[in-house]
Image 1: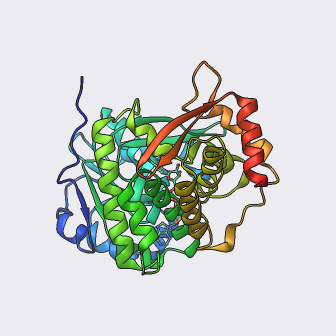
Image 2 (image 1 turned 30 degrees about the vertical axis):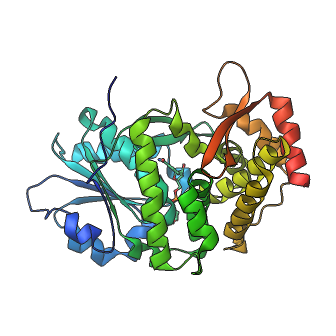
Length: 348
Ligand SMILES: NC(=O)c1ccc[n+]([C@@H]2O[C@H](COP(=O)([O-])OP(=O)(O)OC[C@H]3O[C@@H](n4cnc5c(N)ncnc54)[C@H](O)[C@@H]3O)[C@@H](O)[C@H]2O)c1
């Protein structure tokens, strides 16, 4: 069996991560930077400083651009720039840039090195690590992609200073997911005396979440076992994302809320612990009221869960749910039962 390459020594977190780890790029070297329009507009001097003599491709910001057309344009630019096998692609941005940039790196000449420089909380705690790369197609999230590990992940939390509150909330969605899987992260969140948005506290959370994820991915890169745990809240979350217009992280928070309620009602999740987890989820949702959900389209959302990537020929909807502190399990329901349980969770 192939062993997942270890991420040991390849992930660097801290305000000097880029400064210390980014190699000096000189004239004549052919490398490629992918970023989005918001990040490029916010950090023009940073790009000039760290990426002189480098082709920079700026994708319009937004999930709607995580598609084949963008991927084609990126690959065309890479070819036009004359990149070769030893060239590197630097993906500087949120999860959208990381996912599509990672896929472009995986495809170009059958794979060139990819350095992830995540700039959103969601990307720093989660998506930049683990090698899942993808684009959306036909209204289905991340349906075309590859497992392709980055050669380095450089995480500088100071990027978070310019992140809108609503995007911080998105990152908290993935952090609460880790709290459902790790007793250590659960305690950190529950017992914190600091504001969750405090930069030094976020750096602690980022480090803990990344450590947890790297361990899980090293044990199960292709998601046949423990890596499925990283989908807590995501079956319903992805379905909500497709119909509601909410972002990924916000949708995951509502997915966590509903799936935890369903697991408590089914007697799968310990009630006392489940209620504490729900309280953390509600606190994360309250970090930015800009995107409250009204649940009026929840039946439509349930339909979308039919296209979830965890589904198999048995037709059941599969969810990874928290069971007890630091313990998770898979929970599968025939579609009608899933829909009814979801409707009950909404009413509760
Ligand atoms: N590969 C994985 O394992 C994995 C895991 C979770 C999520 N994802 C994917 O990640 C995507 C969501 O990622 P996201 O929430 O980072 O979205 P995103 O990349 O769209 O970024 C959110 C917004 O923040 C802006 N932004 C980025 N950095 C900024 C900064 N420092 N200051 C100000 N604005 C900034 C972006 O321009 C964008 O408008 C989804 O496509 C999801 O499917 C992938």
